[in-house]
Image 1 (tube, rainbow, N blue to C red):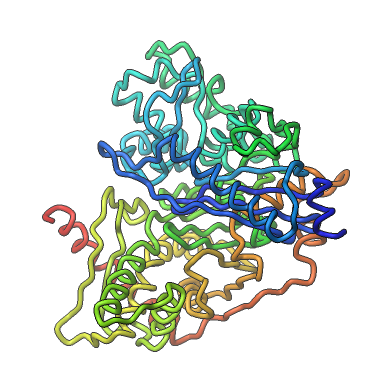
Image 2 (image 1 turned 45 degrees about the horizontal axis):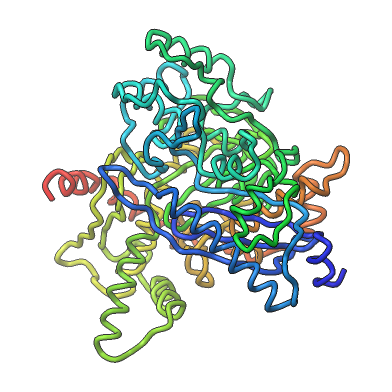
Length: 529
């Protein structure tokens, strides 16, 4: 169908994802090819000891990203958007958004980045015999209870950022199963919250005298393809401030960035995996069997259809690289050289490939915030070298790329070595892979496995949630998400695969030995600086 006609007749899908540094809107056609996009840059704020985003900034970013996408449609195709076939919202997983009966936010949004729930996470992990990471919503809730925070008694609804946006635009208090699995453990047979663990939590908190039980305040769980409501008239005005967008549009279950990453890389089938590397980094492998032991370093979440996924999530990835890039950019400007941002980053990443496989004796930690996988509640970015280290630009940049995924490798080694998890395909996406070959070579060395980047990977989670919206609108009877992706979205697309080189694997292994051994230096920096 002609693109203009496709847009005018509403044969499209829109995905909007709230990432940690960018909100992105992507409009796709019937075959899920991107037609237009818009974005809004934002940053979390550290306020009173909490990493947060304000409600004003959430709405400003949503409206700005939609408006930019709509303006691009008008410019490129001469169409004013009034209809959209289906919409999906996704966002950073986990965190804590608690509301009272009047829909008032009780405390500022606590994001996944906060590492303030150690006591609660440990107690719940022990009680459930199931790993509950610090960033999970249930850990935030229980920590607030342990802290005797006044607002807890007034909670009427608890949700994630994606769930909040969806609720405000549709009136529906629902959540996709993948995002829900980062709030509370999911029973993979029922695709709902684990009933036994819900009972244990209610028993734990029974003496508190709250007027609610856990399931009263959690979102309803839906799997991919289910109807999650429609855009209300108020929601349409919130999304499109111009007033052109019609209400009544189908909205798919809201998902987390893990689920949209799996969708965007076609890694929802068993024994496939993907790694998303940007401000944070996480790797997910769809399991073909349950893990034998509980590991605090390993999260168990689900695909958008409720299949069990082992996830290693690290709070820090490219922030320190970005900070060094800014320093190099300032140096360039001081000698009257203006570098294009993409050229700057490509140069830094490509130079890393010229470094020694073990980084020549350089070591560093990219911990802007805490890193629970390696046992840190807060962080100090730092680098070290021995007096006789090979301190070259290439080794410096290679060390930056290695340490960006050092904590991730620390966690993955548990899966591969202790649980004997097998993975047939690993897909990469995110800014870490933007420069040709560099990020893939480093990641393949870390995993000792081939890493593939699809052409669509650069579209990211916003495209992934648009695909999930299209699936909800067009799926046929009995059609699974795996079938839909393989036959209608990724048919014939191979991507670019980089296999690990033994010298790089050995070099990364040597680097990790030093990385683990030198962790006390990072702890000393936190305690003394």
